Image (tube, rainbow, N blue to C red):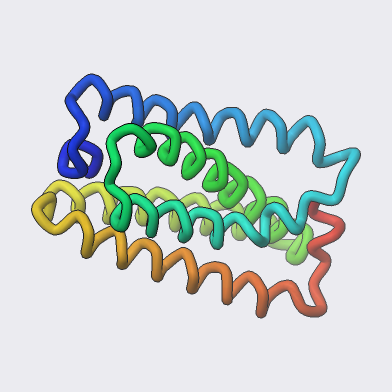
Length: 157
């Protein structure tokens, strides 16, 4: 609905959504391959800012020609957040790693459900929702910066 409200046809919006999920998959594949060789914690920590910038671009520059590319990039940078947070959480709290992993999975599912329903019910307020989501990603970035101090984040990546 966001993409159609931004001027894309149904076919273009479907392509954008597919590229979003493809971006997540590509990121997770590359992250899995390269995380053993390289310290990817900085990519993980900076991903919320990249997502915020891309979400901002979605509501400031609603050009149908670049929206599809922005959807891939948004998915790509979001692909780091979920597995990265579980990995980091289980390294920080190994004795309760199952609880940490389960809590983060539940938070992910609840957030996805809430945002999906919000977008469905308020599809006429896309720019406002995108601004809210941008703010959420900035808050996530700030929280990650606070949490990384005195943490074992290097071990998680």
